[in-house]
Length: 420
Image 1: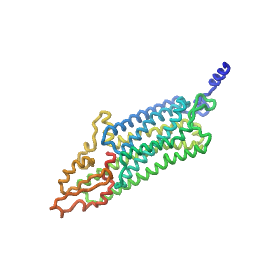
Image 2: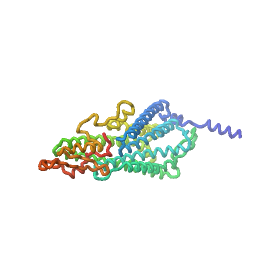
Image 3: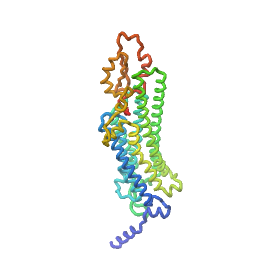
Image 4: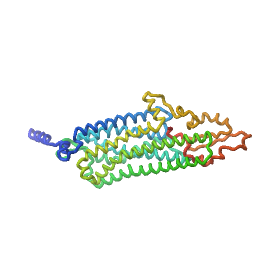
């Protein structure tokens, strides 16, 4: 027994540090303490900003009734996913990449693989759902939009689907020794089927990245065309006092909203593309020699870039969404929650549906005014006309505006929009 114990101790003493081996043979920079310090500061900044920004988004929407719209609930779900990523992938992955040893046990090895795959699926599918919601509101305004109860069901379905599609990663995660290197390692083991690994990697690339981006780009392209056509059509019409100001404000609001949502997609794609390409090229053995020699360094660089996606979304909301920005400031105790009406207290602001209903009685006293009400259930704009009997022969507002084009006007406000 003593001989066996001594042999085991000698074997453990004879193991080689993977960091030392990589530096001596390949000059792998990820094994140097200076590199570790640089990336530790980068990851600490990303985690702090990601947690702070996404918590602000969640608290702002949950505490303010006026922000609880369908697009904003999708954004809240994205923020929840980003917080999970900050607490897991942005902490455990870089530690393991620099230590080059797994110390968290077999269960967490499988869970980490599941979280990594599911979070990416969840984000791309949610961004796709947001683009489809905007498409329905703007391009198909007479179609019933996504309601909040449908939104909750969609978020739950996306989460279930994301977990299901990521299960193969979790089932192939294993913990064990590697060669004569010290410690144990968590890695994907596809030794039974290398072809299966490549097939699954290609499937993930298509379903997780390519198809969602195609749908998203198509939706926002059609949205931009619809809005551009609506703006051009209005230049040929007679500008009326109330309606033109409302439409101009709606146009600016929709343009800001679309810029924010398109920016979210562009930031997500730019953040995750290097990481996805890096892993897919590994599956097909396409790494050049210089990447092979610094594979841990390039892996941590692409992963760090991917983690920045948790920061971009809150920055975009604060930059382009006035109500969310005001809610952020209110949370920080800087100023009370305000809306566009506080800064723009004029007719150019689009009033909310409730405020429009409250003021409709006063507007109807003016026989030359057309009151526009939004049907919350179907998202259509319904004109209501009241004119005095002695003014029937005078020119009316609908002589300048075609009723059917009004019903299909993409610039009319909708209760499910993000108010900007």
